[in-house]
Image 1: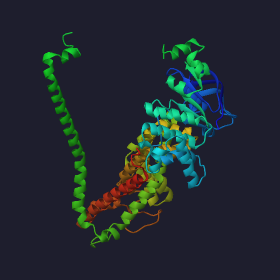
Image 2 (image 1 turned 90 degrees about the vertical axis):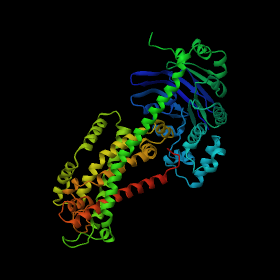
Image 3 (image 1 turned 60 degrees about the vertical axis):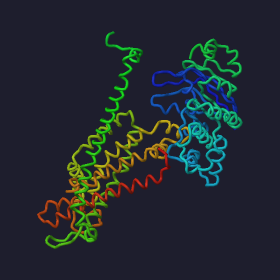
Image 4 (image 1 turned 30 degrees about the vertical axis):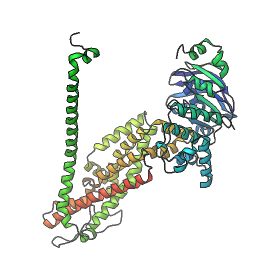
Length: 253
Length: 302
């Protein structure tokens, strides 16, 4: 089951440059929350702070509090432990190029020394691929076909399956459809609807229609600040901030 | 304005005739460049084929079962072979690989994954490049003072150490370059699954870069396989079988050197045969490793 993501007073820096200013928001459990805003506004940095990917960049740091359910992300948890609870799907599909489809899905478990017999692993791989709506397309040569030989849209669903295999509680998606065509995008969006039943989803998108289609809540970022956080229906019909209105009506960004 | 032509003017009227001329010039340039690069390829290939062909011509006549299975005979006695030198070369190269490959790959991993912008990384990179340029005879002296003087006798171990030192900088730098070619998204994918950094480096990044790393290792291996100078006062050479790492050991390059400068025709022929065997050994070793690695990889995986 999904758990909520609670962020309080989050600040983030790249060296001396501050990228996020005092962000406070909560993404509700088993719902999809979208983050919109112009390029460079800090959406991706925000998402990367949640699974502590931000700190892998030299000179980058973050302060504040992030809680995944009851777990404090910045206190008493190691980054690898945290990331096993927080799946992530990246902008560009990034399957492991030397591995088969099967091994890509199993990678998270194998590399984390999860002990299982072959039958258990087969089941997990099949379930994850089914949950990512990819099973029917790859089931015939799971172990022979390289993950990198799939099409872009299939690769992205493979990456989702890979993230789901470690059974996270929340799934972060950083512009998961920006490298995909409309048909693949449609498939991923359908998938997000199904995934909501079991996971909490936080999606960064440049596409406002996409936010309107998949998310119950939407946050608008501008210059490192969270300007408005509201129900999606409200933010796209009657935004309370002038800047939000200017952005969603296409006056800038 | 006189010599600037707008696209519209260039397209219009009389100028339209020039378009076929331009493309003809491009075609000629294209053919010339292709011809130049093909001939450059032949220039590279020619010495290699010439050397190999000459070696076969001179050496193949002296290669016999005896040559491959017997130790050298005293001067004046016909026959004999280089079996002990082939064995010695294999032992010394194996030892050098055992010592040099882990250190080289480890240092390459440090440079690419941990010490990228750091001061220590800069020093390691610089020292490694300088080490790459140190003459092999100097490396031999280093191994002599590090191992031979301590042990008070020549040994296969000392030869292995000398060759290992020579292998390290090549392996280090190619490993670093190959790891840097792996896109950071691949590392992030592993981090995102909760895989710790050391495990990501070994199981994902190094695994992805493996074909390139192997190329570096094989380059280093092939380079030291023919080295004579660093072995002169480390492994020293031996006329008899030796399987003890602590004893002077024969090696093909040493045996070739000794026979080639001798005044005997019979020994000259054996030197040619030895050189041919050495090259074939290198080709076989490199191909075997390549084959083994490519088998473990999926098709279309790069």
